[in-house]
Length: 369
Image (cartoon, rainbow, N blue to C red; front, side):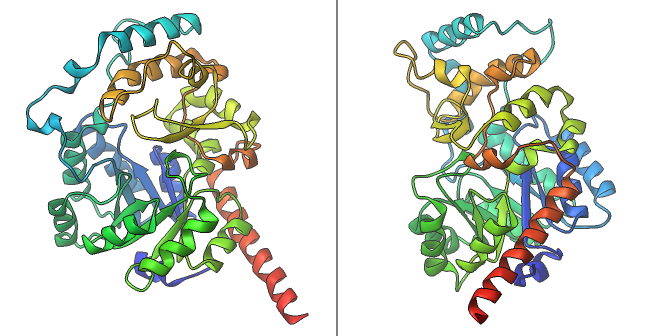
């Protein structure tokens, strides 16, 4: 299981693993893939710097990357407008009322009451500044092409840039703007995702930009068979995210996430919903009593990014602390139906590699028959 992507990034397996957990990211890199640490949970640069220092010391000298959330268009919060003042009172009242109806308790005084500021453009820029002070191998942007000056800043530091795309025209724009890797993310993926399924999207993007930039396949990849299918469709590697949520190392970073893992392990591939309630942009989440509350007639329309996340982030902190699997708020893809147990990262990587080999062997036998 090796492609030219491995030589480009200095990895053994063309498996890119996105995760908010530094313990998971480091374990993916040590196992031969490229762990990509999601930076959005870090509210200040010093906190991220400390965690990346830990990554430097715990990846065994193997490469790793970071993922930021940065729209190409500069939003109002960079122009001097405090986004918190733009959240309507009715939305705050709905969230408070819903949490009470779901039985989610208040947090103790002084614990986790702030929102996640990493969704703000200004904070994402500070993430880039800090990340480039470390020996990272990749910067990925979850919202498409970063601003031109950020791409140039990364390139000046010798760091390639990846961006997610849900349409072939998005991928073409990314490459024209200087993006080095395109992540073709299908409809079934967790988190922000478009309308086109991976089986259709991937070859369209490969045909559009594959001669100019390597394409990574994302969405619906949780086994070696699915990774083999992605490479057969023209991808140079796979971008995985959901499967790392059900790993033991995830609890090393976030021990309060055990109820979330219980909910994921119990879920089927039908137990997700694509909604704007998490960030303001369409994202696939685990279907729970929290997501169902937002689909009721009395629920307000979700706010645009970044206002929606600023609205619900404190609620998410309360939900995570409540230890109730039925109200979990977690982005996850339809591949959740394969996540039937909590396992070490190394076992997941090994299964991806062995499943890939088995699939290729089976196809070889068919072609030789």
